[in-house]
Length: 299
Image (cartoon, rainbow, N blue to C red; front, top):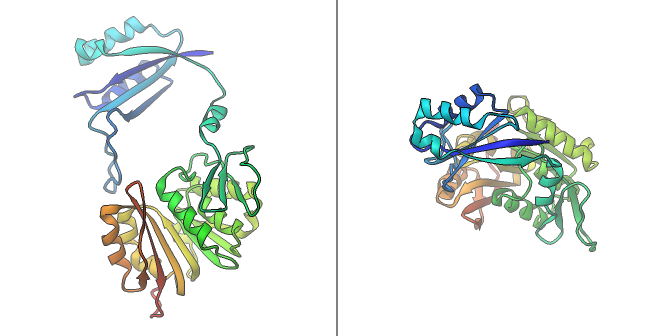
C-alpha cells in the first residue's frame, strides 16, 4: 500500500489554518514540525506555541487529485504558497520495526543498559539490562535529561532503598532503580498514558510487583530515600515545597530537565532543605543532586 505525502512550509500563514484545510480535503493525518531547528523548551501553562517556521506534512490516499487540491490551496491561500507544495510517494512498511532500527542498546554509566525489545549488547559481567518500549510516553534515555539521571543511578545504586520517580513518563528511571537494587519504587505522572506505559514496561522487566504508580493528587503522604524528578525547570521550582518534604533526612534528591541557564534558580528553590553538590551537564542540560538536611518536615 502507498500514500501521497504532501509537504509545505507555512510561511506567513497560520499553521493551524493549513492543517484544517488539509483535514477538510481528506487528509488521513497532518503533522506540524519545526522547519528551522528552533527549540521550544518550556511553554507557558495553557499555551501551545509553534515554531517561527513550521513545516506541514499531510498524508493522503494514493488516489487524491493533486491538481484539484493545489487549485483549492491557491484559491484560499494564494498561488505563491500553492506553488511550494511538494508531493512524494510514501510506501508502507513495518513502522514499529523501522522505529526500533533507530533505537539501539545504549549504556549509561558502567553497567546500565536500555534495550529495545529483542536487542542485547554483547555479554559482560555485571550488566543491568532494561527492556523498554516507550509507547506514547516520554523517556527512552536518548534525551540528555534522562541520560543524566540514568548515569546517576548507575553510580549511586539505590540498594534496598525506596525511590520516588516524579514525572515518570515511560517508567524508565523507576525501573532502572528497581533493577539496580531498590526495594520499591513509586512512579507519578500527570498523564494517565504515562502510568499505563510505566506499568507495561515494569511488567516487561519483571519488576511490576515492586512499582506502584499514581496521579499526583493520589500520591500518599510519605517519605522516600531517593526522589528523582526529570521534568522541567518551572514545574520543579513551583513544586519545591511539595517535593522537598518527600525525602527523608539524609536522603537524596535528583532534579533534571533543566537548562544550564535555569540551574541556579532551581537550586535556589530547594536550598532551604538541601545541600547540593556540583551539577552535571550534558548538551546544555543540567542535573542537580542534593542531600536532605535534618529539618522540620514539610509534608
